[in-house]
Structure formats: C-alpha cells, structure tokens
Image (tube, rainbow, N blue to C red; front, side, top):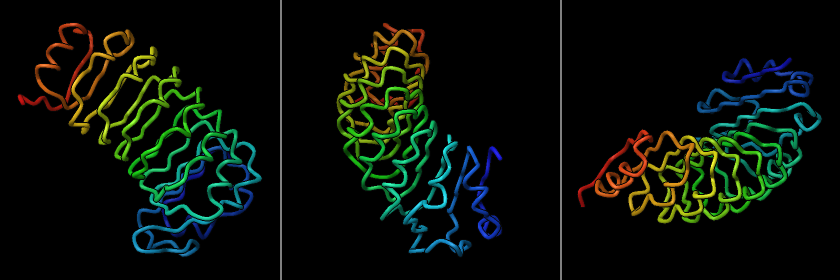
Length: 226
C-alpha cells in the first residue's frame, strides 16, 4: 500500500500494523478529537506520545500529523524516519524540534502555528525545496541562508525585521512574507533572478521602488502609506 489517510474514528478503528508498516504516505488528521478513541484526547487536541507502530516502516516518505499535541517519545521516534521527504506538523503543540536535523532527505516541510522562535535545527536540511513556517514567532532568518535549493518559502505572520539571509536563495521562485508588518526593505530580494511571486505587507513607497527594479515579479499584499 502506498497511501493511507486517517480522518474518521472508523478509520482509526480499522488500522492494522501491516498498513502502518508498509504505507509510504501517511496522513493523520485530528481536528475533531472527540471522534478519536484510540488516542488520548486533551482539551482541543489529541495527545500523541509515541509513533511505535510506524518505526518499522522503512519506506515512509510522507507523514502528516495535524492538530496533535506532540510529547514524550514522539520526538525521538520522528528522528528515526530518515527516509522522509515530506513532513507536515501543522497546528501541533511543537515546543522541541532539534530532532528534525536528522531528517536530511526532507524536500518539503510544513510547520504552521507552533509558536517557536529558533529555526536553527533546519540549517542542514539542504535538500529542502518547499518550506512553510507560517505563523510562528520567528525573528532571525539566519539558518535559512544555507538552504539554497528552496523554491517555495512561506514565512508569513512571524516577527521578521531583516530578510537579508534570503539573498542567498538563488532558486527561490515564490515567497510569502505577509504579516511581518515591521519589515522595511525588500533590497535583499533584488538579485533573486528566479523569483516570480512575492506576497508582502510593506510601505507603498518601498513596494514601488522594488517594482521598478524587478518589474518581472508579481507582487501582492497590503501596501501602507505610513
């Protein structure tokens, strides 16, 4: 079996270990924890403490865990999935993620609404082509400057003031910066020749200045007068 997606209680009740061990793509979505009986529910999230049934799966390429509270052994379990190419941990309570530095084959990573600040654990994930870190607490983009294969990047709704580390991302085609309302300058993006789409909230005069230099880029967002 190549793909397995869990969305309903009935799906969870019918899981077999053989399915979990053989699937190359696995999606667990628990936005309705009241419907889940096999995982411990706490407040508005499902608490996931280990991924033991999956650890024998050597073929897992895509793992999606949405709306989980990750704790306990989950972090060390995740670090064992070294074949992962796509990982999504959206709307999870993710406080520790040093383990991600072991997943060197990742090409697509999405961690949305986890409220972390330090992104240094991703600095060696140099095969990444798509990175979504929407709505966290990120202030420093330094660790991203080594990820030169990235083609799509979303760092919207963080607390970013300086985007100069992005100047090294020469393969970047799409960039989302919306919600970083204190951003003053787009100058570091001027030399990114492959950049075609930019979403940003910034002063109108800076948007106009940048558009004159890079008229080939499609720019969208909110543009303030002051």
